[in-house]
Length: 143
Ligand code: DQA
Image 1 (cartoon, helix red, strand yellow):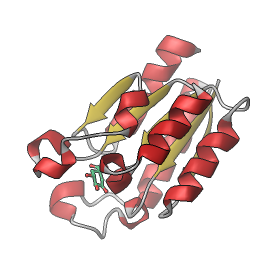
Image 2 (cartoon, rainbow, N blue to C red; image 1 turned 180 degrees about the vertical axis):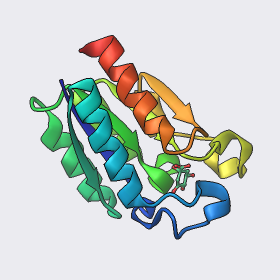
Image 3 (cartoon, helix red, strand yellow; image 1 turned 90 degrees about the horizontal axis):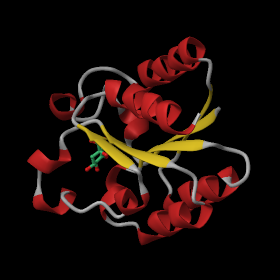
């Protein structure tokens, strides 16, 4: 099974950005976790991070016909991007939404998730472990 993990803006700053909210683990730690999960679970895991909305849309479109499941943390674009929602709906690849922080316990503007409307499942507030949970969810339901 081929899984694509997509991270949106500022997630490359993990470990530096607001550690009280996102923790002290770095983006490199996340990449290591993904690699380890792929090996342990015998999955082909690719990852992509961009700070640019259109690049995220391009990557979702690229996945069509190539990828069996998407794990996506659209970061701030979660709450604004109809384009990312439409891209996920267009490719119809099973997707799981991840948020490192518990967005429900934060500002009101973080309560809406456009991307989440096209996702099978959402994991919020479990830190980096949420990515592993999302991968295992896709494996359990779609492998
Ligand atoms: C986030 C939550 C978003 O509201 C925020 O804009 C992010 C990260 C999270 O992983 O908790 O950049 O998606």
